[in-house]
Image 1 (cartoon, rainbow, N blue to C red):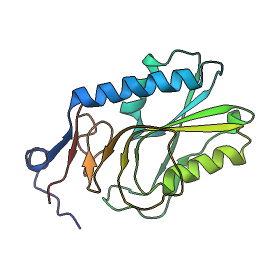
Image 2: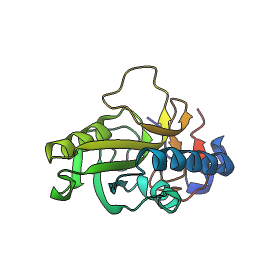
Image 3: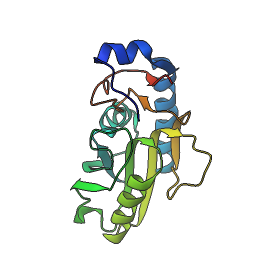
Length: 182
C-alpha cells in the first residue's frame, strides 16, 4: 500500500507527469467532436459520475454540439483509499433514464466495476442506449466488465491523479495528469 507523504505538495513534487494540460484539452476536444457526431440527432441524458467525473464533464459539456439534459450519479469503491473495495451508492440513476439515450461521463476507466454497475443500472431502469465516455483508461492488460465508447487518453497501470482524479483527497483540480512515482 502507498504510504501517504506528509503533505499534498510532497505528493506533487514526487509525482511523474503522464499527460500535460495541452494533451488533456486536445483529447477532450477530440472526444467532443466524436460524441457530437454520434449523438447529433439525440437529446441525451448526460450523467456525470461524481466526484471524479466533474472536471472532465465541466470541460466537455460546453463543446458538445447538441441539446442535452444533465444529471449525476455517485458511486464509489475507493472511499478515500487507493484500492477499490465494495461499491457504495450515494446517488443512483433515476427513472428519467427510461427510454433515453444516456451519455455516461467519468474520469477514469480503471478496473471497470463502478462504470459497469452504473451502466447496468441505467439499462435496468429502461435506458435504450448507454454511451460511455471517459477521460482516461488505465492499461491493465486484461478484460474489463465494461468498454468505453470514447476514451480521451491512456494511462499506465499506476495510481494517477489530476483532472478530477484525486490522491488522498487532493489534487482533483490539476489540469494535467500525474502518476505516483514508485
